[in-house]
Length: 292
Image (tube, rainbow, N blue to C red):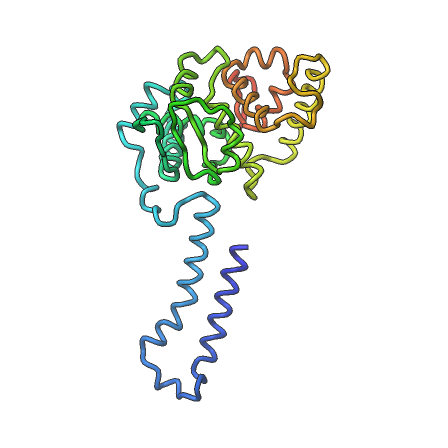
């Protein structure tokens, strides 16, 4: 689409230039020099602008903040990653460099809003950004562009589904922070809510966050497991159509990172399907050569 649009502008501009001298019957030599400069340069300027615009759109750059992306994550934020974020500590030096770039990008793109008298700190911003980046770190970078605002509250979010309608992410900091007090208890609301936002992003966005066939494989496996659980009588749902798939995806991601051994032992097929989808494996059994 971007190539077509750029080509259209270029051809249209050339066509305009070839006929401009005849406008009003004027002799082309009577036009001031600057008019000819504009006529010659305009197609190139427009083409460059359209190309940059679409590049920014695809890679989730804010056009008016381009210069910020060239900077590095500052020292304070890097220290927070080193001290507070377990996932980052396990990465190689090269992977850490890429992770910092993505966290920096995320922080540029999002507006953090506080409620209930909470003061938004650097730790809050970095931990929330890092949690989001963790989910897709094995794949091409995505920054949840459908969600521009992150609301930090003192009260727990009773219905996480509401942010799907408001296009905002609501996070209770106390609950979020509690999820990082242990990395093996299967409880991490931060991972869960970011995974839910990612699932909604996949529905909202026209970009290919996930390979469709890989996602379908995971979804089909989930359906089988969900129907078994419903039939057991332990589920709050009476049939599969009532199931909140975004929430389930989020729970599966939380389980995948928090208790991978338990997940793989009880549902190996689903573990593998989710590993392929995220192109990561906390257990180190599967290797993915490159991000894509």
